[in-house]
Amino acid sequence: MKAENERNSIILEDHCERISEKMGYTILPSMTDISGLAWLSRVLDKSFKRAKIFLEMYIRLYPNDANGYIEMARYYEELNDEKNATKYLELAKKRT
Image (cartoon, rainbow, N blue to C red; front, side, top):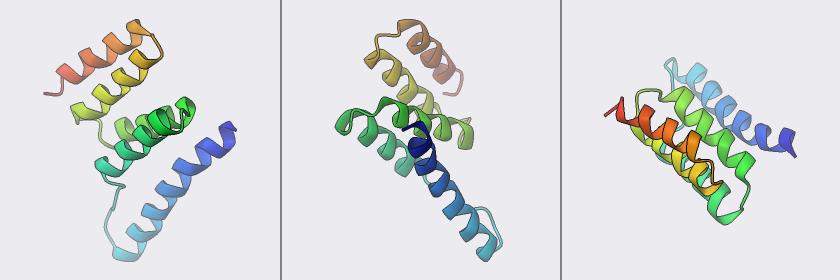
C-alpha cells in the first residue's frame, strides 16, 4: 500500500515535470490541489499515509507557505500526536 500511496504523488509531480519541460518553465502542482488531495485522503478516505505524503509534498514544494505546516499540524492532531502538531504550528508561525 505504501508504494501505491507514493505512486500517487509521484504521478502528480512527474506530470508537472513533463509539462514544465514542454513549456520551458517550471510548473508545480498548485497548493490548493495538493492541500485538497491531502484533505480528501485524510478526511474522506481515512488514508493517513497518503495524506502525509501529500502534505510532505506541499511543504517540500512550498516551504515558505504557512498553510502546509498548519495542515500538517491538523494531520498530527487527528492522530493525537500533540508533540508533532505543536512542532508544525511553531513552524507555521515562523512563516507568517
